[in-house]
Length: 97
Image 1 (cartoon, rainbow, N blue to C red):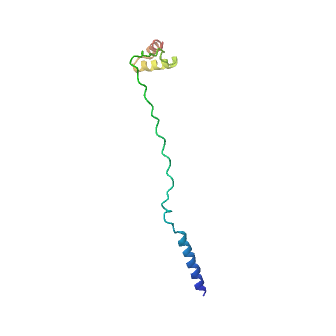
Image 2: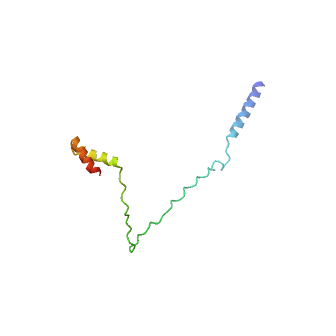
Image 3: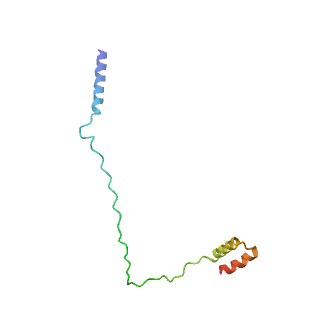
């Protein structure tokens, strides 16, 4: 009798476990919503040059390096040219100014 009760309880437990795994038809076909696609890139119209417009020139002088930067560059150029130490100083003074 005791074995029969254990078998009945065990069968009922297994039956409920099998029922918990049952999936309703159509429920497994539901997918999560797809993410939104990124917005399209902005299209900008290029500026069309005007043939009869006068040309625009930039008359501002180019930015100049500092005096120390110019002296360093001149000393490097003098050394690359093979000048001696006395000639490098003379070359750098005339070059940097």
